[in-house]
Amino acid sequence: MRIQQAHCESFWNKLHKEALPAGRQAFFAMAPMKDVTDVAFRALVARRGKPDVFWTEFVSADGLYHTCGVVDTAEKSSANDNPLLRDLQFTEDQRPIVAQIFSSKPEMIAYAARLVAELGFDGVDINMGCPDRTIEKQGAGAAIIKNPELAVEIIRAAKEASSLPVSVKTRVGYNKESLEEWLPALLTAEPAAITLHLRTRKEMSLVPADWELMKKAVEIRNRINPNVLLIGNGDVKDMEDARAKVAESGCDGAMLGRALFGNPWIFQGLRKSSDDSGLTKSKHGLEEKLDALVELAYSFEKLTPPKNFSILKKHIKAFVTGFPACAGRAGAAELRAKLMATGSAAELEKAVHLYT
Image 1 (tube, rainbow, N blue to C red):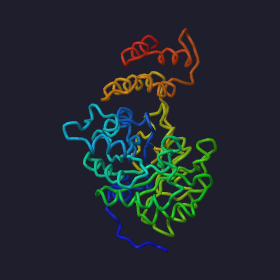
Image 2: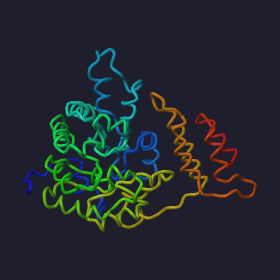
Image 3: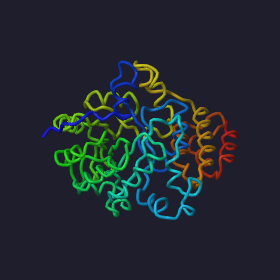
Image 4: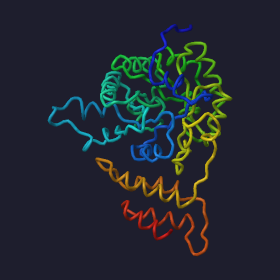
């Protein structure tokens, strides 16, 4: 049955109708990735070329409630001592920005939706796709795919709790593809947008993302609720690939995740014009990449409460790769090992300077 509804004005609608450069129909977003897309990394990306939409790392709605909502005011955590609030920090140059939360409890989602609205976010996204066992044991993340009724209840709780547009990030099924059952349930709850990771929970990331399924999802969306935006996610290699996948599948936008590793320039030029200048592969030399890594390390150290510096190792692996030893200079493996052994931004910068 086709749902009749007023076209909700939100940043999503404005983005899709007004904010894109003339001639560009699709939008492109940064995926939420735990211990990757924190405020420090988003700042690095923003200075080199913003996506159309930023996402935060995902944050536990239950955790927010128990550290911010039920304790006495004098004891409430601040952003200086609460890692959950730290993960919800952002700067104005990172707008529009969506806060991603997770829980299996509608009342917790409602609390978190109100909180992120108070924090000034542009939207709230509910994670219904994370395959992490610790999240699923809570009945959250991908586990919600097995309970469409609960999914609808959670989305509606978030919508009723604040004026922020509510979106969902999920997968095409749990043990098998189930778009004909799963997607209509989500559409009846009328979220502003749905991001589909084009694998099942069982598949994890062990098989290629099936972008043919996005065509099926678009058909279902168009039949039931054409006002909901659909975003494709999975194996998007670069902006050229993103644009091709969107054009072929008919969805409204694409979300890039792993393609960001070692490449904060991936969205460079995206918002400047409607031609291909912002949508093609760009080449950045080793010294430019090392400078960006040092910049990231210093921003990372400013996070409060601090994160373990070893978290940066995944960025070091991504930035320092693919070049051989030559003219007395170490190759990627040797330099990477030296940078991995550092324990602060100053040590990392010193090791980089010794190399360059």
